[in-house]
Image (cartoon, rainbow, N blue to C red):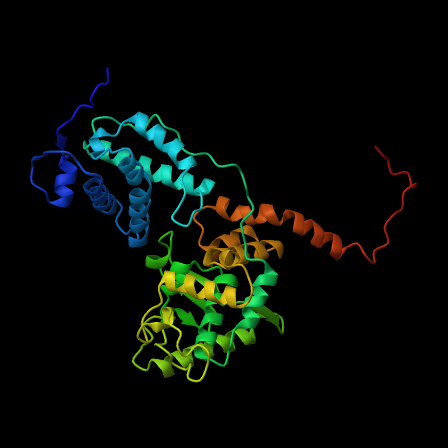
Length: 386
């Protein structure tokens, strides 16, 4: 005998009513997935003031394309009909999930899908929109310990950099963006959130605002530095690059102010007359002076990688950020300094780079051979051996 799932009256809690300004009444009827997801995003945003819209957008994408898609396949129209057994089946379903690009989910992707689903269902129970906390008995998706950050290989980065046409403003702009991601460790959202006033060439640093930072904290990041006359200074070629982009930005978009976006579109076909890119349509095909989006930066990097003969999967914003963290750790930058530069909330995140750099650091010490030139005692002088 198959037992039907019990329909329950959905009651909105007093806290939710006060927060959303909804009337003091029960919500009648079944709660659809779309309605439940909308309620969750509104409530979660209100419960966590200052949460980035991009984070809420990521939650929506995860819920719509994962657990709601699973429910649609199982013909579970109402969230109230979803049981803990369905959630366990969802975990198994994730193992065989294939994206629209015919790619299976990575272990990290499965972990994120399940964690978002549990957060969503737990919030619905907390708000008395579900009668049972069905997520409580299902554990989280465990990942194998893998401290190795996936960084852009240095050889591939050099190929991309050497392929840029610095005779065109787009080439200068793209080089400046790559510098801030690969040599300063900026996240792509932090990069596109920069205004021209955030770039201080006199101090040689970039200001990352709290509203664009993942951890909601302001920080200052140094441009690539070198030692000159016993003090640290911004590398001259980097200072020249950033100054060149600021001049080109002002020339191409004279209406922009210092309080406007640092990295912007340059308009369709602008500065491309007579070149093979004259008919190109891409991120630059938008009107000049618009702030670049994160998707536009990813598209630009992908196009540059293909043109340079490099696998686009190896030249992404996050892999460039990993390049900064990994090479800095290999060079011996202290974890605390690297943590501040990368904007990590916990030193555990930064320690991944140091752990992976240990083998490289051993090689560096061996190559340095700091005892060279020092007369050391030889064996056989009464030194006890084991």
